[in-house]
Image (cartoon, rainbow, N blue to C red; front, side, top):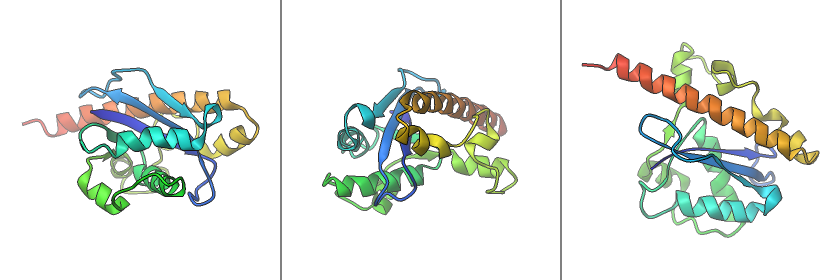
Length: 177
């Protein structure tokens, strides 16, 4: 099953920063949401609890059970794998083995191609109607402005899904026989 997936963190270093939210939404084969967006919130439980939830989904023995689709998934997965280790959650293989064995879809590379192979300005906030990047998440988190984090997540999810749908439609058209 295909799932939009993303995380929000307090910074970029998984050894010291933490995951404050993990969000995912099941998508159908036309990239439409099948079920409501799920936001696992560290501030309502704990980082360990939300990591345990996504751990079981990501590392299911059935590789087709939870196929992550996102933007810059390498960052998300690297961060998650490091945090899994910190909390003693079993990771039976390396991240590189995971990437080799597990199907994932990362829209980042499509947007780089669409941006004339330029990395600069190829972020989701530059290429879609997403209002900003996530740089304010640590500030919102430290100020306990969790409603602002949730608003950001919802807007980012909508922008991502809209972008994914456009990419799918245009690629279908491009490769029509």
